[in-house]
Image (cartoon, rainbow, N blue to C red; front, side, top):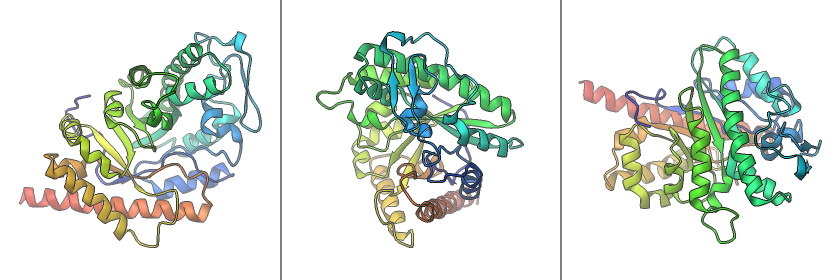
Amino acid sequence: MDRPGPLLPSGLACGIGHLPHCDPGDAVEFVLRHGPRLPCAPALPARSRREGMIAQGASGLHGIAVGEDGSLDIDVGALDPDAPFDDEGFAGDAWVGLRAFLTAVADRDGPVKVSLTGPVTLGVALWANGVDVDVAFRLAGAATRRRARLLVEHVLRRVPQAQVVVFLDEPAMGSLTEDGFPIGPTEGVDLVSASLASVETMAITGLHCCTAVDYRLLLGAGPDILSVPVDERIVRHAGLVGDWLERGGWIAWGAVPTGGPIGDGVDRLWRRLNRVWDDLAAESCDPIALRANALITPVCGLAQHGIPQAEQVMEHASRLAGRVLDQVDGVRMTVGA
């Protein structure tokens, strides 16, 4: 993952992906307004349940029909990890938000972010729907690797001058070490790592996990950007984080909660973020890299919010990102002087 220069400009705010909008045009206007420097393709499960995380991940898989309610109707005998998708051009109902986004950013020459359901999360869903565990995760891994390549290629055809940032959304990775989980931690990390590696020469890769997790597993998967909530427990892994930053790794900090009220101002959120950074710096992490290699995001997607609440969350993320940029610029001016 070692890179000679910065992945992205400092002080960026970005969404996670899922939004509460029903109208694709409104959703695209929202992401361009709240994340103009790193806009994120929206998924719109309120418009169609087929744009939900699992439904979208399973869409087009041979042997699986996705219902209007997002449920999966699986013909186990027809499943084939080597079969192409029924829809390889992202033309179906699961990708309306993506298509609207790519049309809107067709002339963009900066970075754009797209997301996919990760193989562990998709594999768990298939297993929960009655697919044998070995078939479920083999299919999920093969499908995610293929879909990631197709997605990046599709984005580059539509927006050829863009810098593509592609994230795997992996909430299930937070349960990899729990008793009774259908696969082991090593197998889970290998699935995610292979999916990220399938596009690492074409795009900046990211891994998002909004649940409590062993950070060693996430870092071990090898993304360019690790997306996690602001959580004091990361300080226990300060050595790993410090090495990660030294190798050019970035962290997308989920600094704006999505599970309850957030208040009108960002001072409390800013203090918590800086407290985590200060604690990491006390354990020998580079305080400048912690800020320069940081994105600011909500903790999770915003599909369960009302649109006014989603607006407030992203406004908070933008304000926090502005404070990060001010700190980075201040340090650079001091060093330059």
